[in-house]
Length: 71
Image (cartoon, rainbow, N blue to C red; front, side, top):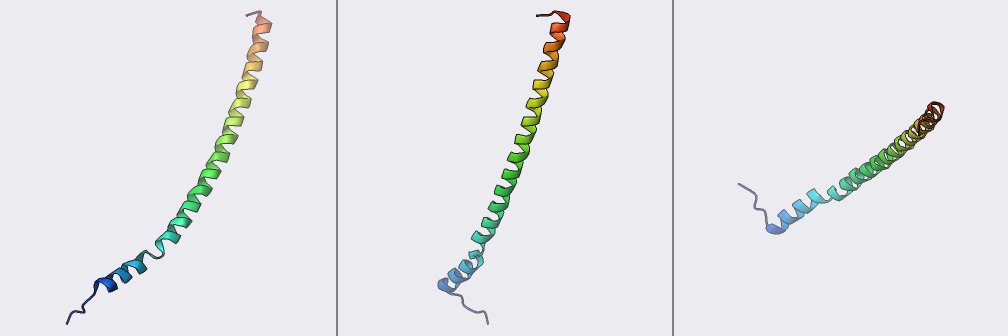
């Protein structure tokens, strides 16, 4: 014989199923936030390095122009 389930029982079962979902999303969101911070740090390092390389190239080009008397 099939057990009868009331709407209240069904609501309780569904509530229990979703009870831990918020905590799981908090963990996932924290991991994504941590990854974003790491990517931001990496991006800033790469931008700084690229800017330094460009400045060095500009300095070398300026010296080369002066040596060749190009203006």
